[in-house]
Amino acid sequence: VRAATLHGVDLSEGHALVDHTPPRRIEFVGDSNLAAFGVLGAPSTIGLRGLFGLGLSQQSIRHSWAHMLCRMCVAEPCVIGWSGVGVVQNAIGKHRIAEIYERCLGNDGSRFDFATAAWSPQIVCVDVGANDVYGGRAPPSEAAFVDAYVALLQLIRRHRPQPCLMLCIVPRLDTPVYLAAGYRADDDGGMMQSYLGSAVDAYERASGDQLVRLVSIAGVFAWPAAGGSVA
Image (tube, rainbow, N blue to C red; front, side, top):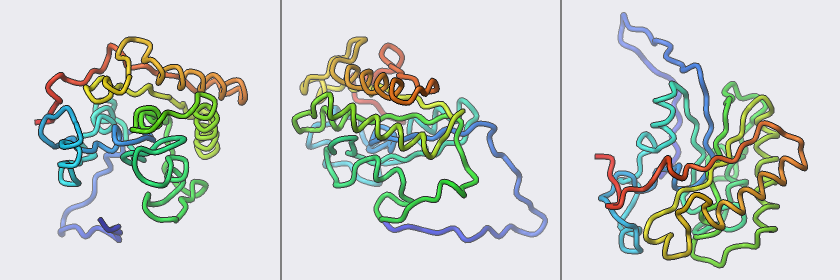
């Protein structure tokens, strides 16, 4: 996949652009849950066979939960999502989410100039950590995860100053593969909830930032037993 640059828009004579800019702006930072990897694929419990059978043709950011949420809230989304990415360690790939966050494009070394950008969100949703804990490797220690997650929140806050609200989402992972790996689908989310809760608490203590929240979607959002489909 190559980068494309939009240089302008030519309209037919007698037509004009209509400003439909939504009143709200939400930024999303995370992994394949946000990048909508495989969202257009056939319903699957996502074993290795199902995973390797998916490709870019089954990925559609407009069918992501982030875009669906923004359509319901009349908000403009910006998604920084990269499949397999983590905070301490990735399931796949070399660059972790903190490195990708500051780039213009995820697959090159260019840096985004936050200071001169006209677009700025009112809310940042952070949905990352599942690949650290359940990405196929031994999970990092809670201390290592907390240090890296706090550094990520500090990085985001540096570029998205208050009164921007930061929401740290506990990933919902109750699919057969993650359950087999040890994920607990009850209300406390097991290790994932513990790690993220400790990280958010540590960030609040260190920074005094009162505009950060831990958000659990247990009981609100659940994967369908058949694997799901957007059809």
